[in-house]
Image (cartoon, rainbow, N blue to C red):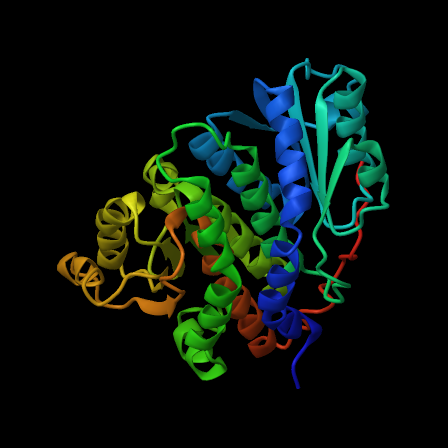
Length: 364
């Protein structure tokens, strides 16, 4: 019998179709951002939404040339020393919109004259009411405590906002019509990714996570740095693994010393500039006997690069090749969601109701 968590993973294509139909609302918000002309962006988020904010850091940096800072709400709520948010776009990202510290940071931005935008599944929430513009996710009720469909909806909403923020008259590497066309492929790409990873394949590929495994690491870089953090969070929440996310350079700079054959690794390896960089690190991990799992959209011509590195034991999860790298996190996280569900069930845990967690967490 499937869980709410698994059903909501499979609802994602329909959720994203509904969200893409809201393009006019995003174009209106994008026009407001262009008129405001922010000098930088500050995000206010927690949990999975904070991982969506990590995606925004690369997305808005690469496509909108904006510096994005992950906000520190405690500067407002605990220390009473808010940073200067004048001339900023303050993005509040929250599935429920209920967390007081996120709302407080956004409200402080509004007080200072910043432009405030909420990305939330509940438009009439404290966060939504505190922001000048609200972009609802239209994900419907999410029954499982661990976020799935609201997370990919947040990524898609941020991608839509990024495109809508671009100047239609500007000379762009990719015209706006092309970027919107790429976004239109997202629901089908997520559906294809689900089809590429049926339950029996997920169970077999996840065998690297043995019954006695307590630690695991997840690697991702660039646009998929967020994916590594989100998959690690899902494995923590549902399977109770101590899963740590790293960018490859950060692993090289010290933590690799703690990695051995008893600690499995999951590598997010999309086609793009980060793939070749991953090869020497994966070869080193393979040399140490680390059980490796791979999430990739590399085709048969690209995958031999991994064989040439001498890798002998990677289990491969696939995701759709239909998306460019900037949108790949919306599909690449899906195998990680399926992996978390399968691992939790194999260990006798209920992924719908992780111990000690609630659907709405109100932090200050």
